[in-house]
Length: 340
Picture 1 (cartoon, rainbow, N blue to C red):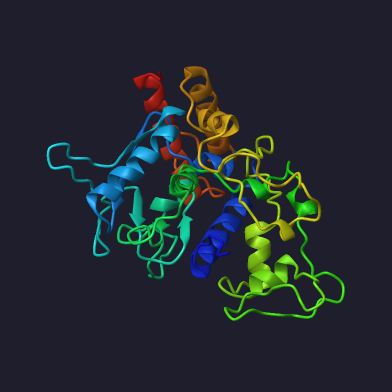
Picture 2: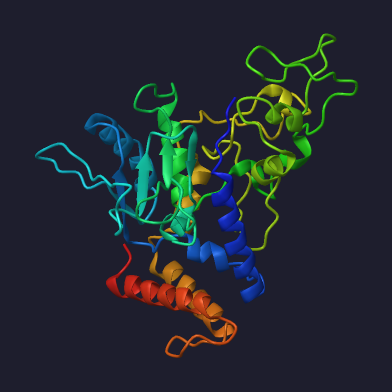
């Protein structure tokens, strides 16, 4: 079982950036959430690095469930006459699209929300990051061998691209206590021919830390914690834990302490749950009052940074104040244009 994971160097860039934001703004609840989502009512462009037109069309079609549930447009640059879709290149110096899809790297992953256009992410080079010539979303091997449940994988990764986090890390859920982190008592490390940790000769099972240290993941303990432990962070807005969400992983049964587990998914893993749709409507509302509330909160953050909408960035704000001034302007423009 190979879990999705961004490259370590990209995760490090994100962690440095987020620590700076927290220190600058004092951990305001809505800070990173508001910066990480796109402006409601806006159009977010998508482009493909590789793959053929049929694959591109299938992926665009799979995202319709998402855009049907929120006030946001995903523009794949479809040319109906030619049947082609927008493409991007690793040599790009200007953004061909906000979400840049590839199929050539191992595994599945996506940057979260507007991290896809944050040049600080992946600034040291590398294939993944927020710069024009870097991948922001990857669907590995879709060009040669799509998973059986590929539509659910596409929706999962595109929800990341719109600002969603994993459900098993929801602080309102039960997964932290339900996961069996450590080996069963007396377990003797045993690997199969592929390097995967399996039950030992007496049937004792490896824990999550041991299992993920083997093939194909080879994760150290810190990486397991980063990807699986609960995110108890004031900057992440968490809705109710939803076992039907496409953002909830399907882990092997031995990952859980109990059967059935309250952390295990109960949905089909393919289609958006009602909770997913409510979350999309919260992030990208159709109602003008919700947009006005977001604008007011963004203005409050700007004032807390010592920089009013018309003034220069304050001493406590700097680049973060500039980012929030842009956010206030975007939300004001969206409200002026009308939300429907």
